[in-house]
Amino acid sequence: MRKNFLFMLAIPLLLVACHKSSDYKCPYTNTTAVAPAAEVTSLKAWLDGASISYTQHPSGIFYKVNLPGAGVTAGVCSYTTVKYIGRLTNGFGFDSSYKRDPEGSSFTLGELIPGWQIGIPLIQKGGSITLYIPPSLGYGTRESRDQNGNVVIPANSNLIFNIELVNVQ
Image (cartoon, rainbow, N blue to C red; front, side):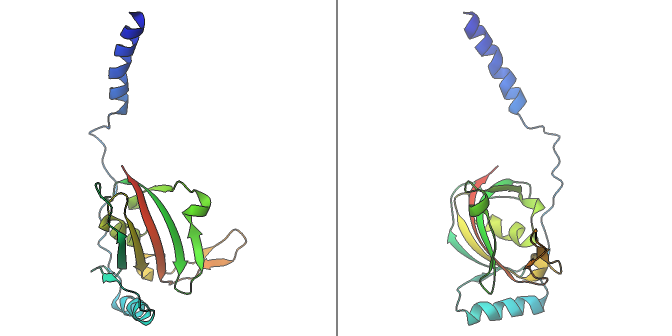
């Protein structure tokens, strides 16, 4: 009897503890970033030259939905878990969540580069997409270096990401 009482008492406490506060204010807004025409033209020329099929988004990213997924779509305030590989147009792989964390990497979508904020909502949970991102919707004029000081992503690079949307919260 006492176990049942404690169990019945614990359920409401767990529900209250897990309930999100209605006072939560998402600090992110949907990006309105648009790549300059010269970047879009350059990336489009590369895609056409490589005979890659794509869809062009009004923002200037290009994409190919590999698997649409089903259910939940991520929003800018969604906590997402993704598996991805990032590479440059010369084929150099600069990042892979598969190597670091085979279960996927988790982020709030609004914390990520504009190209991901625009591209990830184009699929649903369980889906996969390839994003072709012009520099201004990626890392722009910033270069990225590894721990040894070697440039991994040069400034003004077009980026390619193969992304699997594992979960959306």
